[in-house]
Image 1 (spheres, one colour):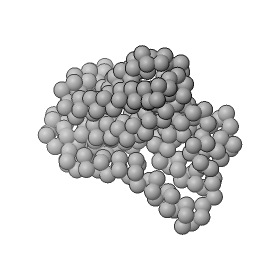
Image 2: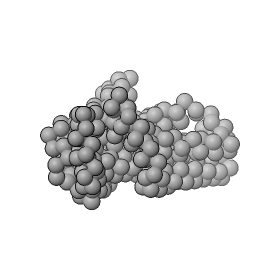
Image 3: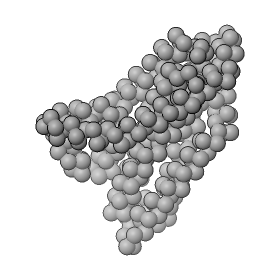
Length: 274
């Protein structure tokens, strides 16, 4: 009951969060613009048009959604710890785990609503332009995006549990986002060239980045194969076969559970102390 009450409070607070509204507006506008341009270009509609739109949406999701989850999660505990409200909250008959789960559930609902708004409007544009002939693929992409949002939020909570101040947590979140989105790919390519890694080793290193697991699943859902991802994608398909999708999905869920468990452990030890 305490967890649900805190989740409701966090959801109400999220409605007044200017960062969340800004992220939602940016995601909705960019997703809608990509849907419009992808399906209107050269007058080509249907499956081919949706393939281009899906590829563009994947890149947009990898850029925006982790930023949303990391920054919102990073400010959740550290911001209240800095203001002193977290100390008052933990003085009540409620455990740190209940506080963390309540905040996570409330922010997760807000993030899912933001992601759904972007997918809803772009889906309407796709239907209006050429008919949503791949509705199941579009729904699968939405589900994977929700999973990515929850994963990013869990990592944001871990940062928030570790950080002393809100500004520090925000800086750490931006650094992690930059590393996951940009630096990991460059570092992976450089490591592969210097150490002359095999395809299997390259795949293993790639999957250490949770965003790569999402990318593999999303491309497989939209394109039906992983040829666009090069040798690592083809090797993954040959190695795992029909078990690739469950394996990658469990990998994302495992990353989320691990980050949330570590957040609960750190928060239980530190509480409201700076």
